Image 1 (cartoon, rainbow, N blue to C red):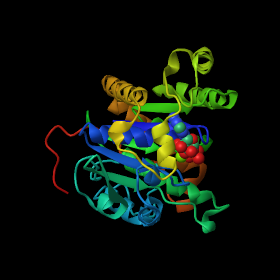
Image 2 (image 1 turned 135 degrees about the vertical axis):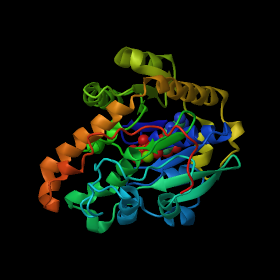
Image 3 (image 1 turned 90 degrees about the horizontal axis):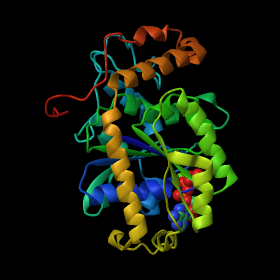
Image 4 (image 1 turned 180 degrees about the horizontal axis):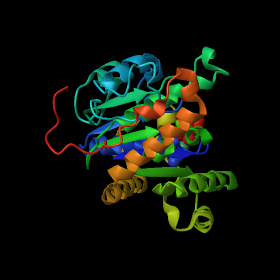
Length: 328
Ligand SMILES: Nc1ncnc2c1ncn2[C@@H]1O[C@H](COP(=O)(O)OP(=O)(O)OP(=O)(O)O)[C@@H](O)[C@H]1O
Ligand SMILES: [Mg+2]
């Protein structure tokens, strides 16, 4: 299950995704944590110290390796250089599974111990000085999109992505890559405005979107969100002393998280699981092809000097493997 946390800057995307990841680890289900924000905060929220977090490999910097692995023997992808963030898998491509060892995880993921479980953490990588003003900095966040498009995750396997604030994800197909998107909104006009913008984009692509109200301080806040968001409002979360202690560098044991927050995490988990029935791998594949063709026409054909539409394998549908996972 591919789950994203999106929302306005500072709304609590990193906080809530880190809590959700801890909850899944505590529930003993496989989970991969992905920091897709160029401002990297997820590692710290998961309890990594500064030195460990700084030593995390940047997915964006390892794109050639990722591309070479994923393209495998796909004859439609001539080289890693012509493979772009939206290049879809086809016959011969290598796919990723949540539970396996592979060279992509070996190079790009690091374990973080949560509730006694080693959880893989992957990070897009920080925004380098040299990226500023360069259009292809999108290729950094593109590494996550590429991985998601090659990932065959099953029921009760989770990939949780802490997304970048703002509209960056609409420039690519990234926002369509999830079984469920949690939009974190504070009870403010700005928080709700981001929800409306997201909803508009999401509608055309049939995106499953649920609003998680955060920093909700009382009935008035909750009523405001209920008014503005209607039935898309899944639940609201209040201020958490546990989170504040964490922010002070005095982390508490996860089982001391407030009962309300724990209940909220269970509901997020249930909401994610419910979307499994709506899964449609054909649609998923169709949408990745759609965004690939869009990218090919708008910049990538010109950049690579090739017709990247030819990378699409018309007969291929991404789908869960029916047998047991193969060793890499
Ligand atoms: N429920 C909560 N209770 C207490 N503090 C919270 C809660 N949610 C978020 N915060 C605090 O609000 C601040 C912003 O949260 P967070 O970093 O998770 O937001 P974000 O959406 O990831 O921000 P950015 O857009 O910068 O990535 C942090 O200091 C965090 O500790
Ligand atoms: Mg954040």
